[in-house]
Length: 326
Ligand SMILES: Cc1cc2nc3c(=O)[nH]c(=O)nc-3n(C[C@H](O)[C@H](O)[C@H](O)COP(=O)(O)O)c2cc1C
Image (cartoon, rainbow, N blue to C red; front, side, top):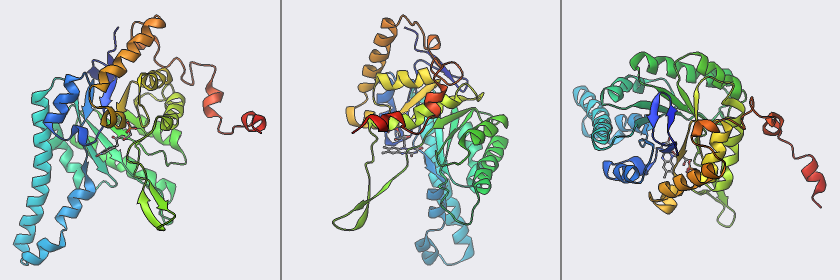
């Protein structure tokens, strides 16, 4: 079976990308993913917040009160963080022969955008931008929130020429148009739908805010499945699906919807890296039964332009299903 796929111009031997997480935070762990047949990896994110917080650590300012030291500390903390990350990129590239995608988690177009060049120079095959904007600020219009995406892309693209993907949030009122317009800039090569955020929960006994599950469940696949099906054939960029993909069936569904690749994290934490091969075997078995020889034979078959099911992906009311349930 031919499981090869081209994602943002990168040749992957199969569509399984291990998503950004501590599974991809060290060369040791990355090697394990590769030994078990991962198609590509996205490195753990460098957080814009993390850099800014480190630069502004109050204890540093107390220890060194004169301006030169403050400058030095700022420079050092910035350099230290970045150099660790750049080393991880370089070392991973030397250790494995699959695409290594760097990742930055960002909320603004501030100073981190200049780091992008060094990420490219360190050898990353692509850069994934996890733009994490929760539109919860009453003083910010949706246009203002969306403008941040364009500003970030503009600045980062002026620094680098490797492919760029945006790991999207689903919290956008005009999601289809936002993605289409970002694609039209010709500065974005791919979209990752959707990032799974930290979700606060409430403990009703202690009346405290607690964290909900860190790991996804297979039921969470449906949000990205709908949007990949709706967008993949209408937007001329590549799509990778993430969140809730836990088995071969999940990967097949996303490819039928039009995904070029999938990113998997929770099920690898739960089942170990060996599980990558199990998923690949499930895909091959299904392809054999259906007489498909390559992913191209069935990619996008159920996407909104190609199937008669567009209305099913657009429907959000249960209607007749509610009617039948007593
Ligand atoms: C422990 C853990 C750490 C993660 N760290 C990051 C990160 O640094 N950057 C990022 O973009 N996503 C991060 N993610 C999100 C994953 O890359 C992925 O998008 C999400 O878990 C959904 O995929 P899944 O359903 O297969 O888990 C993390 C997820 C987990 C569980």
